[in-house]
Image (cartoon, helix red, strand yellow):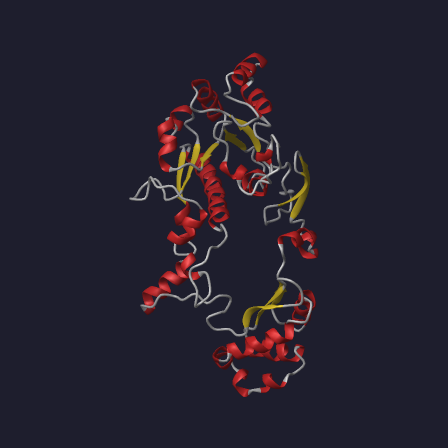
Length: 385
């Protein structure tokens, strides 16, 4: 998705026999719907900007077409377990024989080397095994899920790897290969906690929404169902401003709260009083009042509020599409802007096999007769097989 936003022609390869499993995630169950697999919000969110084709790589003709595409491509990225590409005869060393200038990325669960090489996994597993979940949750509760954070983190790192690989390829003339473990991708962000544990001999504890030093630093319930506001007071000056916004309540006059250390020691008391103050107020009003007072704050936005948020709208953080069969849908853009280019997605996620004929005839000059033959033998198609 990121590479497509940057201008690459990204061709997503699936098979009717084994489509991308994310097509099935949270797909709406509509009775007798022949294209139910097109309704997944997960698939529709992660695949914008791509063209989609179907190829059965277990079929000799399908494999031949794939290799012809490799000859015409700059990059091949796969998200299989470690054994799959090698079993297909499509490991990096095989692809180099087809295209000596190819850049390849293996995005596996645990990498191509090590005792976990052949294991399969997904986001929830990576979060636990990378150490990220040990830091997520409340101090008196179990580890928590990050909600799939390893997927976008690995994706952005892979996009960075591709750009570096293309630069290196163009400089050296040699093909490039990247072995990206999605567990490594999560663990790479945990340098601070790792070093803290090494230096102190104590494992960093889960602390919910609290900060190790600052207080108040939490989310507080506001008026309405599941409505919250986040508040972070970092300095004594911000504390004074915070107290002013609260209307100088008597409890805040306690001298123990005048310092960072004093507030941290009394954060349970502070949290209780702040919660009483926010509970009957609108989350946006609280956040705006605190921002105007110079206190970092922000209201919790639910997913259905994101595309109407004035800040995000002004950033053009989303783009609307009309995608059959789901209708109107707004999708996220990549979170950066170029001065000379629009990097918002140019097309919605592809339907299964939507661009097969377009891609194969445009890139491979495939004849109508060859395409029809592949379609007749179920090497390509637009329905689940």
